[in-house]
Length: 297
Image (cartoon, rainbow, N blue to C red):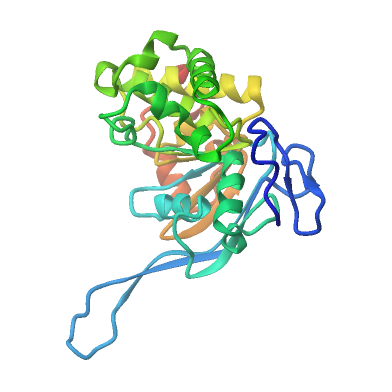
C-alpha cells in the first residue's frame, strides 16, 4: 500500500497495494477488525535455568467495528482492556492474530505509510493530565498529530487547532495556555480535540472519563456522543463501567480474563445477561439498568 498525497492533509484517501484509492467511509470492510488476537507477557524467571513464565493478557479475541456503530469493551481491571487498546493502535505487536485497519494490516506498512494511516485512527488516553506535555502550549499539543502528517503550515495547524477546540466547547484563547491551567474535564476535552484534528474515522478511547468526577463524566460523554453525530466518528470505547458504555455504544463486548465472554447490544446485556461475569458487572452498578441513561444525561 502506498501513502496518499502527503501535501494534502485534508485528503481522506490513501492508496491500496493495488494502486486504487481506499476511503474508510465508503469502503465495504469494517473500519477495524481484530482476528484471533492473543498477547502474552514474559515474566521474570523463578529459577536460574528455567523457562520464563508467561502471563496471558489476551486469548483468541475477535471483534469488528463498523462505521457509525460504536463498540464498547467492558471488563474489570486486569481483564486485558488496555492491552487490547495498545494492540489495536499498533503500539506493540501481538503474540498471535492480527489487527486490520479497514482491511489493511498496520504491521505490514512501512513507517511513512503507517504514519499516514494513523490519521484515520486516533486515541484518547485515560489520564488527561499525563497525556498532555506540561511544557507545551495547547496549540502545539493539539496540532501535534497534524504536524506529524506533514504538509500543513504552522498557520494552518493553528487554525485547525482553534477549530477543534471550539468543536469541543473551549475558547480559542486556550491555544496559548498550558495544561496545568485547566480542570480535569477541560484537559480531557483538549485530548479529544487533539484526537479530532486529523479528522479520523475511529477514536480508541481508553477509560476516557474514569479519572473525572461523575458530573464531569456526563459532560465529556455527552460531548463524545455529539461529536459522533456531527462528524461521523466511530468509537472503540474501553471502560470498566457498563453504565458509561451503555451511554455511548451501539454494541458491547465483555472481556474477562483476556477473552470475550459476551457480545451484544447494551440494552440486552443489561436486561438479560447470559454470562455469570456479565451478571456480576450488572449487579455491581449503583443504579438499576433502566436508570443509567437518565443518570448520565
